[in-house]
Image (cartoon, rainbow, N blue to C red; front, side, top):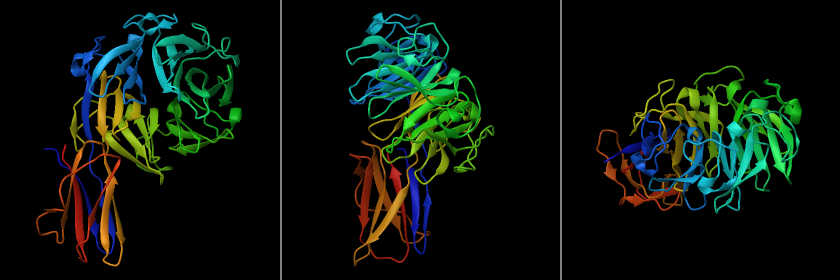
Length: 420
């Protein structure tokens, strides 16, 4: 039985200690590059990159060196959704009749269409829910820079891609060191100076990037960018103003802390959870990082600069150039662990919060939960005594759980155990 605990002391002050992570392999074979469909470890990938989730809880992976888009169900069944495993090309078509060349970026729109940064072809592709693949923007094999009509526009190694609530598509045009927007069949430069790398903040094309990769919108339609070669996280406001959000340009590292003191090393894809926390695949640090809504950066899984493929909990797990990250509907993270050739599931550390209310001073303990997981709240009034269970085991049916404690006591210690 797995027991991961968070402990709080209720007295004159509240002292939180976070629970640890838990990592399992959902699909693929560690360090084995292959092209097999199947369930769990019977499947094989070749440098999986971006990962996204559809409205039904299925996951889609840009299997870059297999030149295909793979589908992974919640129980780990892997199939080929579009493209032919191991066969590069440029053809439009349906399902496995289409061809890609090193796809690396994925994003769904509100209608269930899947947009693909077809990196090796320097194009943006579109896959309908029925699997029909078309070229949405760019011209296959014509790498360069050109704004204008989607069919004549040019990209250079496009990577991260995201769809805004209004349906506009945004692309991290990595080789051109800028962000592109696609709206109404027209491609324009949204931010960054095309083909010029740098670190400058500013508005629109007055700003500079260096090898941008990951993109994610927050709830206020600010566009967050992992500026990989600058080792920073940038933010683009709706008015196209670019600022450095976390990290310091050209100062790579692994430090946790506030936004200014934190350091990153080639951050890749990113994803927000429903509460507004940002998770980042910090690829060259071999870790998964989190930036909370109050601006605190922490390492939630993996060990800095130590690669590996082991699963486990309480800081045991290791990654090898993690790239893609998505927040699943159950509250867990799915990671495309690129050089390990794996899709991994991460249960991130959770925090407890206390609220004291009412004339009887009822204490309510609450925490972020993963749907389907079981939790046990425990309590004691003195550090020298044993823990006792507070009520029965709780099974999470949503992303937050809570438990009340009506017992009076000047000092109470609480912990929550995640049991599976």
